[in-house]
Amino acid sequence: MPKRIVTASLILFFTCISFAGKKKPEPDPVMPDVTARGRALYEYDQAAWHASDSLQATHPAKDTLGRYIAHKSDAGWTVAFGHLNDQRDKFLVGYEATQGASPQDFAVKKFDPLREDTAFFLAAAKAIDIALHDFRGVQRPYNVAVLPAPSDQLYVYVMPAQTKAGVYPLGGDVRYLMTADGGTIVDRRQLHKTIIELPPSSIPKGTTPAGGVHTHVLSDVPEDTDVFHVLTRQPPQPEFIGTTNKKLYEISTDGTIRERKM
Image (tube, rainbow, N blue to C red; front, side, top):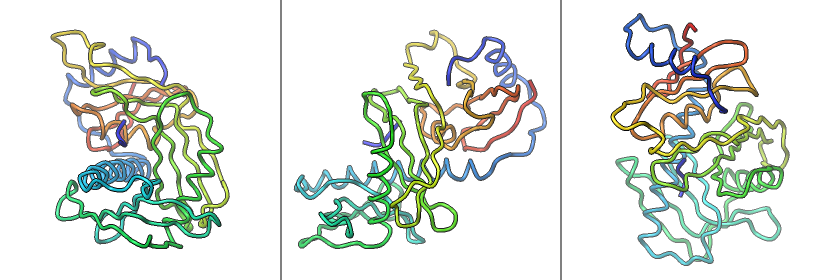
């Protein structure tokens, strides 16, 4: 279920280690919009995960499940499980999981006959189909998330899924900006190129890492999925990102981004 850039130089790594050992005044956070989207991605992933667990406990009919799509309202997260109809003008919901008192608590409702949605879930389902048709990845599982974007548009994220316990993939991901109806790609942003998967065994025994580290070659700023990666990874640790314009950023374990001096 939903869960979770390129080689960094030794110079950058030891720079990061030095930060962990010195206490200096914290610089002001930067790029709050990236932090906000990364946190929303993490919430989406958690909602889909726990809603799916709650649904499986009810032994659902597999032919009505289809795709899962999460949406947040003032009342919390709702995850719909269903599929587009043949005319692609309705999203047919077979099950709906609604968040309760905690992020892990979801109540599941079955719809018979299937509930017809012509609002967010319809637009999101169409956007996902178009994004996946456009996406060119490698042979591996991917997760998809849909978040609201400015001007009533939609963001669709395609990210490598976690396939091994303790291994959190980073990279090889794309963010699509879609029209409000989910029918057209407005913009395509390749967030990272290569997928990194570092197993726990790659950390020398008896050492505690100061944080993860990678470099960006496609952009000079941290990306939404960098924040998502930090929030997802266990045990929690920050991520240090070097860029081609010789800047260094740290993403703290709460998703906050700060620029560090090299």
